Image (cartoon, rainbow, N blue to C red; front, side, top):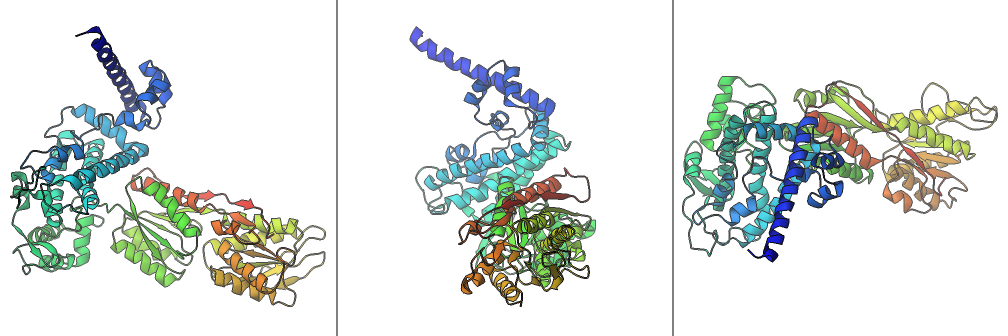
Length: 605
């Protein structure tokens, strides 16, 4: 070899050795202290290189763990794209799990590190998302299965990689929990076999012996391992592929009701057997599983199946999806739940207890893994079915009222108190409050903060005196010797129309208020509408102040003075607490987290 050729080769070997040393040092530290506790600087010191060198090789710390991804033997897109003629897509994906564990102790160590780090779990899902896009490109070019992928390669890639990811993660979780790695892998292989066969029911081309080259006509039967697991043949019914024979008419799609009928149990018992959240007698369980096998029933095409209790969905129940506060809150949830692999199901209730209870029942029926709700009229007993179903609950708003419910909320009482004090300091003395319906939640707390500020100001010379203790629907007017004026708190709906109606009622009083504090910004915008219609100057004739600091608060004229209630951060905090519950990191039966609010000064007050 010429000297000019040896230099690049030596350089590449040196780079490879440096990379190996960095990865070895990182994994040793991860094993000793956990992934999240180790910094890149510490890894650089252990590897005797600079931190810049580490970043040159690994822009993200997570890549040090995934440099040789634990468990999988290859990359899905490469495995499918380079599969041999006669090998199905499902067979290529099945081969990604090794037949045996080459290094059981190493896999157990990696599993423990992975399980202990939310950052690694989130990054792992991002890795699979990237593999999903790469696989979609391969499937779009695949000619061995005719036009089966035409226009749907992205969907098929997402569907087919879902069980691979779930099994990969389940094997690591089982191993981290103490199951021998070989046993965890063996169970994972069986799970993946069953899942891929179930997927083949909806996407028959997955089981075909296609050819990555030019299309060659009708595909043959799938590989032997598929035939062994698949059992009886499947036929095409009106609603999709169904198993021929085995109870039920030819062409009839299996349903949970058909399973219940065949097993002579209720549909609820079938559901409990599938999700594992309620105990089912062993004899009954066997009867249900036999009916499931006979009918070929699967709860969904992703075959999350009979051995898992996770649906990877979170329920979000809110009172008004048109209020900009709640989409921002949902976005905060998604910021955290999305990377963790969860989807959201959203229920809107219009703030009515009847609809809130119906939404909770719907979330139980949908088998959500966790529930987040921001509602005003739900009572403690309404949540008992959710708690009894073993579903973690996070409430956004209100007070901590019962075991089994975590609460994350803004400082509603403190924020309303600060808002009222701000108006008092600006010289306003007849402060009306446009509030939401009576009941537990932010409305009650904000009224309490409003009353407290008035009471605190009542002892000074020339300041307002406190309202009477008989109820919240009374406020005070300023000046020494001033008397209580009832009716300065009005209750209406948490909407723009509700704010307009409440403001009109207050401004129609013989002695109208000189300032209006509204329970949210949407109501405050409604109050601005009324002031404009009446030709009133804001804040010259009447000051108007809101709560939440939604985006529209800075777009109206005059721009709205308000209390910032960080919806997105509340959503993120609620999602983090829910993940803590789902992953068993919280010991106490309930908890409360308060997110501070902040005064935002603009022109309306």
